[in-house]
Image (cartoon, rainbow, N blue to C red; front, top):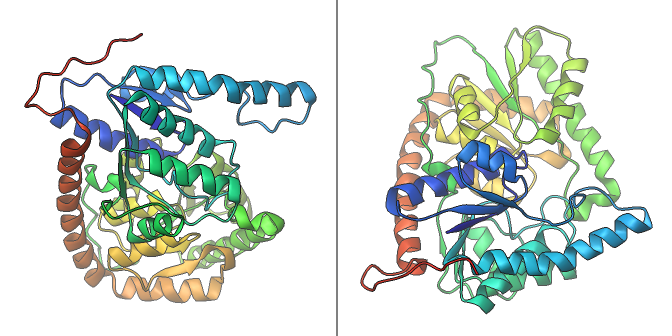
Length: 400
């Protein structure tokens, strides 16, 4: 068994999806031998105890190449990765891509980056008869033609596809993928264990604010700094107002790159009421959101952590996936555009969220129960679709 993706690279949501799949494999397929091809192999091995291989041959893959020798090395790396990926895929019976937004470009993305790597994986799987499963992944319709083509062919070549929301399936259909047999299930993180939310005391308590180093998406590159400044200014105004009212504010991140936003807020709002958490997993994030009265968050998996713990949350949405998630969990009225943060409107929505908190907590309890049942169905479907049947003897492939 192989797992594949930008895992171990500092994004807690991606690693949470891996944790969910490893939990499924250990429970349902305890004899499976698992390793990873991923962005941060050392971190994955240390955290999850499985062998891992670096996704890219060229170690400077994530640095911008400006000099001729760096450009040449990156180009050579793309060629070498064709053979490295195929050799890794060949050693496996099944490769799982666990969740993540692997079929979208809602954040800045170049076609020769992860879309190219995913295409190599899926093409190798088809050629070498290794089943590749895209499990509860996110997708969005892509305008950039090279990226669109790579994503479309990756999806077509996969042996199994499921999506984390209806919009993702619709997007792939719009890009020319036959989705007639593809199902929609909740995000894999909803299968993770979660602490129970704290019981409200009746007096205003702590607020968790999930932040993001947000500059818009692929289509926003021309105004990326403007979007970031508006997001940051609106967020700082929101925090200042809460502090003036005596509310403790706990800042949360979901990726290592978010630290700069935390620093900017702490610098702008100099108050002991504003503190920053240092989460290293979705479990850490859930512990933080469970202790809060309410949550306001941008990153998709920060929202999931709040929803999973049953804590009322207001979403700063940067993509349709956030709106879809909130609607699915019964909080569709509590969405605010991350590209156009209006602090006054945000505060108005926040106050309404707190007024409706008791009712929303009950709604979340019901929706979480349904999500857990749907994910149990998802794992059963995955086993039936891509795993070797137990009716026939099967000898795992040996390394060649």
